[in-house]
Length: 215
Image (cartoon, rainbow, N blue to C red; front, top):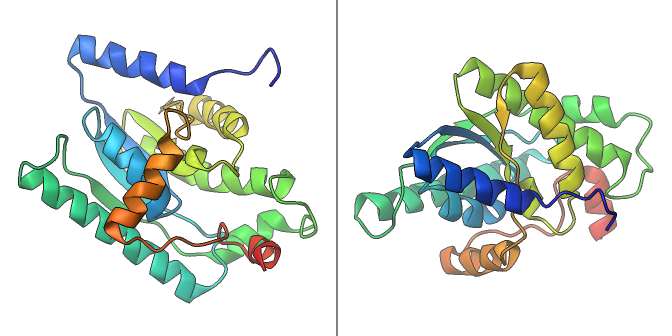
């Protein structure tokens, strides 16, 4: 890691500590890629934010795969809200909004990069596609912050995701919530929660190119 690498988990810790001191509970618009990745993030953040999950993933190539993943996302949120209502978990109830399923949007940004290796420029464009719509909707909805669950994955570039988030924050005049959710055993906890709730865990990110790689 280079000397300019930022520890985004520490930035998030400092931000949450500041909110606690000021007794503030901001509204967070959280992009989610899937139920397993969101499991730990929601468990972690639900005490500190009023969260609305935004499920927007046009990169998922097959409609049946998309429908399976979005159903799992909604099921997990319902399970978490049930725990909160019953007093079995701390935090605030979680909302969910499903974005448009428009895979052509992904193919348009991936054009010319079909042979690009995983975690390269095609993925960076995909990050921005999803984060841009998240920022736009968060700003329009009057949220205090926007964020993504993508940083929990060891296969996703957290530095790049945060760079894109910070740039879109300026463009849309809405605060970006820094994160590297894989830290503090976040990824490990997501695997435990996936097992606990019997969540469907896919073996590729969703696009046709990552599916080919997994096969």
